[in-house]
Image 1 (cartoon, one colour):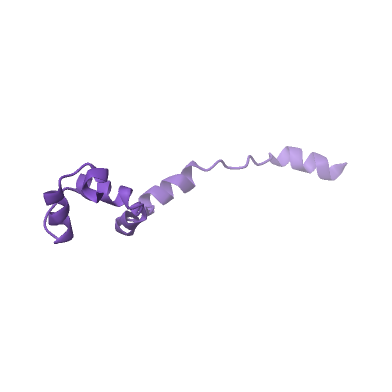
Image 2 (cartoon, one colour; image 1 turned 30 degrees about the horizontal axis):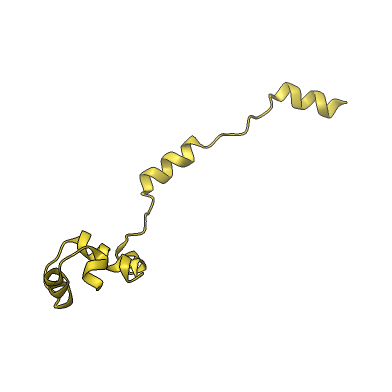
Length: 78
């Protein structure tokens, strides 16, 4: 029943159950039928930002425009 629901042969399911080599697609098909796809999340690698990419992002940040000295003095004189 599980094999037919997953679209694989019984012999392929038997291989999977015994821990033999099967394709990743086969494993995903079986996990999908069993509603256990979350198991694959354990194999994901968290994405990290490299120091070079972080430095580049900091460099690309918008800088606040500063006032010229003349404008600042005019405001304080008033």
